[in-house]
Length: 153
Image (cartoon, rainbow, N blue to C red; front, side, top):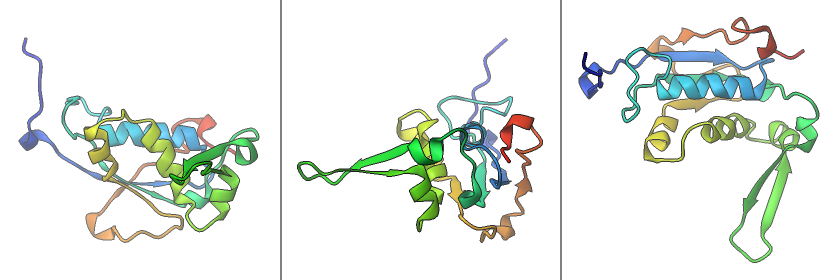
């Protein structure tokens, strides 16, 4: 029995839309990362971009468990001496670009290599409920119904 290794001709990419309203951030990010890598497919090949195109809507209505909204910090450095800065998850979610919280969570669940950077281009995150990808006829993936722990009231 030979091990199956996918070639570019074998790859079929679908479009998936996920509504993030009321969904816990980490659980959503792990599902999205799995879909981006293609690990949900029986033909998964680690060195190929097998994953689907994922659209996440309502990223501004994502939920965080515990006190993470006020205690979880996102750090960056300006490049100047003493230039470390930080914002809490709540400040980012209430700011101009709340989709960055979801993007960062998914990015950190992928391996840090060239392939995962290529796979991140298949992720589109929108703060509101609208997206410009209706022409691709995306399938709806209901993350809330997968597990009762995926939602937070």
